[in-house]
Image 1 (tube, one colour):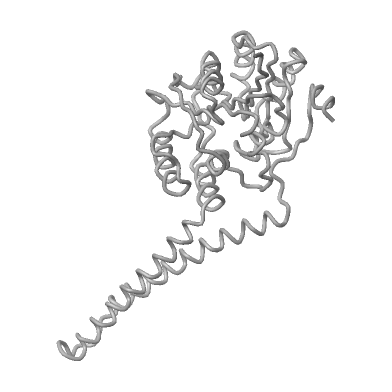
Image 2 (cartoon, helix red, strand yellow):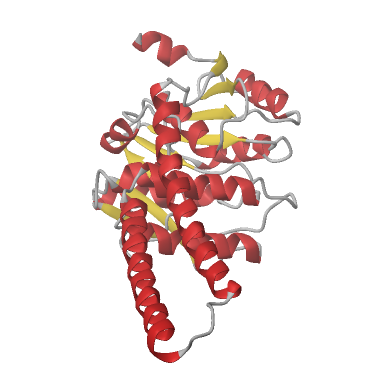
Length: 315
């Protein structure tokens, strides 16, 4: 059966790589009905010119979406998924760390195994220590918060079937986390080992600030476990406070007639105040996101679309 294949590529300051990546994908993929959806996520280099040139070069294959500003990788992927109308959709980065010749392996594993989604994993990751540490931390937390299978690596390089794409794009909130959306729908998940290449240009678009933002999306948007942890933490600190009160009472009445020290009082005040502020901040994060969602904060805003022939025909 001749399946239609879509490839969604979020582009952020990828002018030096995206053109060559597109050429190699089109040359390597044997599928007759293949589509590439490029999503320019507010790039500050000349990625727009490169993407537009490729969209004009391959008008029957490429759909190019230009977002009005930088919304983040997962928001850009959501934009691309909403315009992917193929049987299977591959998500990959724009920096060649996901080799184009491994895309077919990912697709075939999904089709042959009948999986809703197939994740790639790597024998060796060519990231920096900082990125590898962040990925490991993300893996541990996702296993705990999202009930992720412990042997599954949540790679950004993955393939989804039509059912999975349709379920993911039902989410309209401003804080998407693709893997969280997948894990709350299915456990019919495959995995396949692929190569992980060195970055062709020496920079990563994931800063510490962006990683923290991504982790908060996972913590707050797709789990109530942090709230439960705060409840347990509050009970634990209340228990510690009760023990300290008993100790102070016994010390005052039966052991020492000396006045209680200023240091011990300040330690207790600072400890309990810190815990209270932490819990209030966590609740505030939940409420703030509810407010922004209720205020209809957009998930993404498409400024321009090029070569959208098949979408126009659908409509």
